[in-house]
Length: 177
Image 1 (cartoon, rainbow, N blue to C red):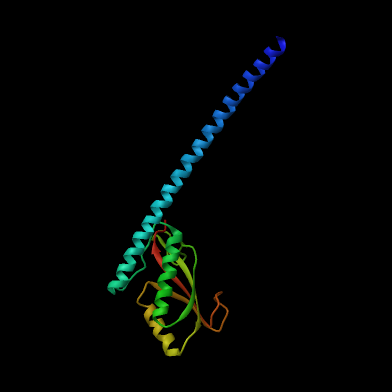
Image 2 (image 1 turned 180 degrees about the horizontal axis):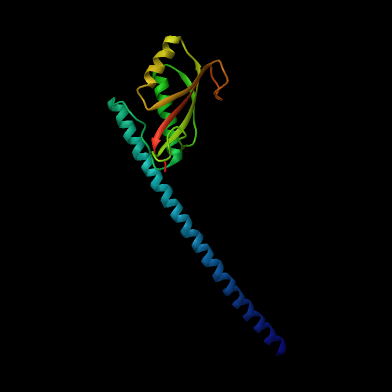
């Protein structure tokens, strides 16, 4: 009888321990599931915003409308992709095969902090070009967009991107503090 009592007490203690530690683990798992659901909902919202923006851009392209500025999204990564795609499309229309690298948006050193302007550094490497007239036409076209040319090198290494003709631009956007 004593052995049976010990087994029953031990079993009861194990059940209580499982319930005590198991309920804490269950609460922890429920909290993690809730966090994941929130992350998925935010990701879905960002994806939907980008889809809407992509559809809008595609509609503008199909109707032949020219963008006078680069559209912006709430997501910094999406903004970098939009700038890169815009410039790649622009350079392709000009007849250039180019590599575009867009860096992170940062506070501009060219404007006082009170003004609140951020800059996006852009590096472009053009692999080949037909003539200097084509390059001059490119530079004229860039002036019609909100870009500032910082560095131009032909065969130099001042701009760390592959290509024969290399450009370093800045794109200014509102948003500084």
